[in-house]
Amino acid sequence: MRIYTRQGDKGMTRLADGVRLAKDHLRVETYGYIDELNSHIGVLICEVPAQETALLADLQLLQQELFDLGGELAFSSAAQNAAIWQVNAAWTARLEQQIDAYSEQLTPLRQFILPGGSRAAAQAHVVRTLVRHCERLLLTLSKEEAINPETLPYLNRMSDWFFTIARYLLSREGKGEVVWLKAADRQPSNV
Image 1 (cartoon, one colour):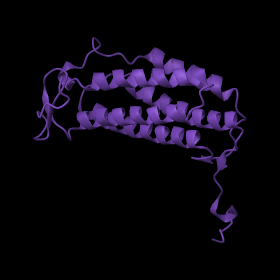
Image 2 (cartoon, helix red, strand yellow):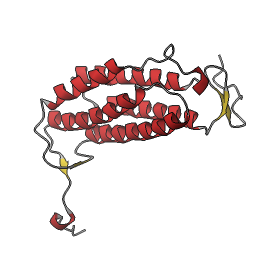
Image 3 (cartoon, helix red, strand yellow):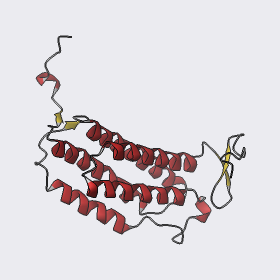
Image 4 (cartoon, one colour):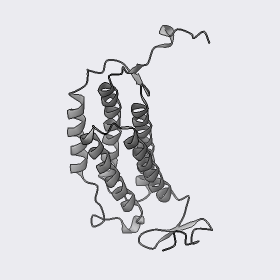
């Protein structure tokens, strides 16, 4: 089977239900960003220590679910209905339970933190920001076309999940969080 079809050479693509759309259509852009998000989760998986088997399993499940979400979005607005929707409230509830479980292992958050501290934690923050981007695109799309109503809460919770995971990874590595300081409290560097 050839990987290229040449069908998209003029800037059009065919959705799962056969509808043709421009490649820059908001629906196509949205599931494209879901794919980019999924790829960055793959990078994060490569940074997570092998002994973190539960976290790695959680991340791989999110990759599977995001592929499902992309599949939902690959159907036109006219084809959107409960028969193709897979994202559901139980997925969001699971993320909430996991956030609570990971948070129990962390010190209470008392300050704003910045992305960084380790490669894995920084990548978790990159993923968090990409989730927010996907969420914004999906919100815009939902104002124009039909989508699964469970997808917005799911992505909203997923962003919180990755914030928590960034903190968890630093904690497991024994590294401190990078704390945001008010401008008046920052010392200029002497570089």
